[in-house]
Image (cartoon, rainbow, N blue to C red):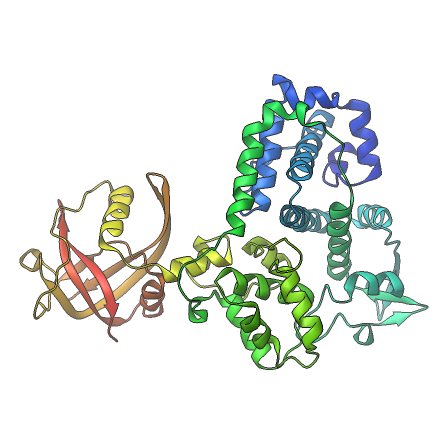
Length: 459
């Protein structure tokens, strides 16, 4: 296989031979200044699997570029192996498998057959009524699909699949999805090169950062009692499926259990959520829930990030907040956030460069019907047209804020408002976009005029 294509599939045996032939000694890879950038990019690959941003892509045009790309992957595998946390291994495997599936989708059948054969998925091309299908032996299909892939309609059950001569006939997208499952298992099972701790001195900072990131996943993600109404649309959809008695596929159940655990729900309450399922078995369900939440396994699994949920087809009904976050628990935190005036003022300064100069909100009697210079320091209650609501992600000092920036108008013209940090409030405003909403808030000001600090949507 051409090196430019080969580097996209680093788990292949042919890839290993390419690295052994052209790559540097392991000590040089881990310590030489010549490979500092490669090591850093490998670290970023690991952090991306933990929910961080994707590292910058390498444009691969020749063998030298291909080698650098492969070395990044090797460094990432070494970091994951050395940290030796099951949660990290699992997250990294899913993240890499999702990327490999995207790459398979961009390649032709020759590459698909090569990759599938490497994954013990030998395929042959068949046809059903003129449509191309990919034939996989039913035993291998069941080993990968059963309890791991599925949907509310049970379309991955063998009984719902065309079978010919002992082979299950799949469409191409289904074939790459099956390969993704095999890739994830391969990555979790394969061990990277053994590395003595003394060889990792130049990567001590990276290793510490990864351990801290994994450690944060073990701590409570949110404070206060769980509030399912603040869950992201994908989770609300899964909860509705469970309530309707649907039999969720493995990845959907895993996502729901890890999410409910992360927002503070007890194992017993998680069990109750699944008790209505048609195949519910108290003993099996208890084992699965307590294994995922770490009660018995010693490893508390973290919630898959949004990119992984999209790959598994679990992302549903995205709203404006979904476009600003990368993780379901991040959505929950934003919905739980208070619309704090001081924090909103800091975000406003970071976004506009203009400090808030007016007074803080204070209790008072009555409310004015217009936002203008005379209203500064008073409460406002009245009708405004919601022109637009835009999500923004901004850093203030050491903290990141996910904020909504609403734009209003009244009969006198535009009305400027502070950013909204409570996304329950922001989503209410977004639902009224282009219409009149009755709102309550406090009028403060900046150098350019009055600013409305929204506290409630009344109707």
